[in-house]
Every structure is written in C-alpha cells, then in structure tokens.
Image (cartoon, rainbow, N blue to C red; front, side):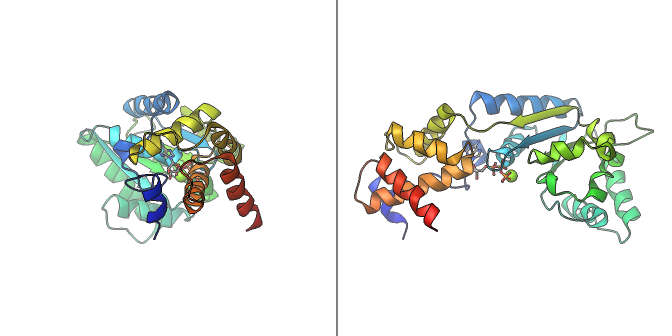
Length: 269
Ligand SMILES: Nc1ncnc2c1ncn2[C@@H]1O[C@H](COP(=O)(O)OP(=O)(O)OP(=O)(O)O)[C@@H](O)[C@H]1O
Ligand SMILES: [Mg+2]
C-alpha cells in the first residue's frame, strides 16, 4: 500500500523508520563522542546519566552502546518499564537477568545484588540500562544507590545507566536523590539537532534506503528542521509524510510547498 512513494523515489525500504539495525545507526561526531564517553565510564565501572528531549536519539545511543560494548566482560540489561514500584521494579530486573523473581521486596533485592556479586567474581561487569528513567517512581529512584553499594560501598560491581528527559536531572538534583545523583559520575546530554545535523540525517537515512539524490530541496529541509525542533523522531514523521505527499502529487522533488501542505495538514488534524 505504501509502495507508491517508495517506487516514486526508488527507495528499497521506508527510509525514516525506527526499524534500523544497530550497525546502521547514524553516528555523527557529536553522537560518537557521547558513546565514547559513556563507554569509557562503563569501562571504569562508573554510572552514567544520559538526558535529552524527546526524540533526540537517547535510546539509539543505548543501542550503539549495546552494539559496541565488548560481549566478553560486560553484561548489559535493558529495562524500560520504569513506572513500577520498587518491588515490581526489582522483580522485572530479576526476570531480565534470568533469575526467578522472589516474592518479597527484600528477597528480590537480595537476588539481584547476589547476582551482581556473582558476576563480579566471574569478572563480568553488569550494566543496568534504565530507559525512561524520568518516569521512575520515587521509592524506586531513591533506593537505586543502595544497589550500587557492595562491600561497605568499596566495590564498583555494577554500572547504572539512567536515560531520560531533562526533568530526570532536575529530579536527581533534589536533596532526597542526591545520594544517587552523586554516584552518577558521568553526566551526558544530547542536544537538539542543529540545521546541519537535520540535513545530514535526512541525507544519511535516504542513502541507507538506496537513494543518493537530494530529493528534498534545501528550503524544504530548512522548513522541516524548524518544524521538528531538533527531534529526529519528528523529522522521521514529517519527512515520511512529505515523501508520501510529493508522490501523491506526482512530484520527483520534495519542495517547500509540499512541506507547507504537510505541516498545514498536521495543524488541521
Ligand atoms: N543515531 C541514530 N541513527 C538513526 N536514526 C536515529 C538515531 N537516533 C535517533 N534516530 C531516529 O529517531 C527516532 C527517535 O530516537 P530515540 O528513540 O533514540 O529518541 P529518544 O531520545 O530515546 O526519545 P524519547 O525521549 O521519546 O524516548 C528513532 O526511532 C530513529 O528513527
Ligand atoms: Mg527513548
């Protein structure tokens, strides 16, 4: 059904989809440096805070980490259901770690921390990646630093990577969360895409789908950039709509008027 615009622009697959392989992700120098800093921190057994507005590419950075951290020596566990209370949060972590979840809060916490210690003995460094951490319930958030405490807080057996919207940082700065915040020694943020980033991202994703031509005019790209306000996810959505609209209008180029029509239609909805 959606084949029309793919045919019009000779694309092998939809270019702006989230279904992109880890190895195909776009890694400009700005993202490269975030990944390198996070890797360096994890390698030093530190914990990481990664913040940024919606859609700027935080989860994709965690996918790059998964792809790049050596398999030997690290065990990455990804948790994204952040809205759970403390006991259910640790139960979820148990399941993700392949442990059988115990009944009480104390027992699940014990199971997780014992597992971390066992990995430490095997010289495997566990990394718990908590996506959407701004949604963490307060009882869970304020307990997390205890999970980082091994042998009288003298061993760094676990790295936490907390990923979330900028309000996560604001929450961590609150007095009640300072114990955790002070342990998140590597603090990284991803900024909104700048005009050049938007243009390069669009070019990159079109090229991955087999189109090397500039099928969006530069003023259309400028308009798209402004509308997306630096969110790659919003670029995906608007660019896809623009390609569809151009194909429907039997155009071989996505020009400013097509972009304007797409944005106008969005406002109408
Ligand atoms: N490095 C990248 N390479 C290719 N596409 C990317 C990259 N980063 C982001 N994207 C695109 O932007 C979309 C949104 O990125 P991502 O889900 O990582 O954002 P986010 O910051 O985690 O957003 P949210 O705060 O809403 O969870 C992805 O689905 C993907 O299509
Ligand atoms: Mg995300």
